[in-house]
Length: 136
Image (tube, rainbow, N blue to C red):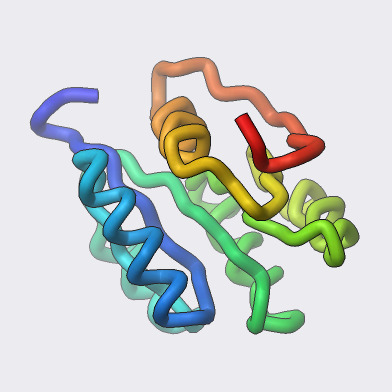
């Protein structure tokens, strides 16, 4: 990553409070953060983005509308990580079917999450894996 192409994180998060916390963490780590809580907002972000972007998806609260958003990320070549709960392990499996690079189960250590997002930027050799738990 260079100064000309900063890493940005698209936050597909339904709950505004959760989005604020995640955006603050990303920004403190030197990443740009932009929230998309609807398909239209995601479409607009994908049309105007510059630099290298990854996405963080929290399916909680979206229902079935989150999966077409994940498909759109995959169609645009945006690597993404999904945050899930142990109660919704099926969402983790479905996330991988829609192209998630990784699934982390809450609670997640902030530094581990940020390191994973950084690893997804181009040229870092990201891998697809399913984390058994969110702890580092």
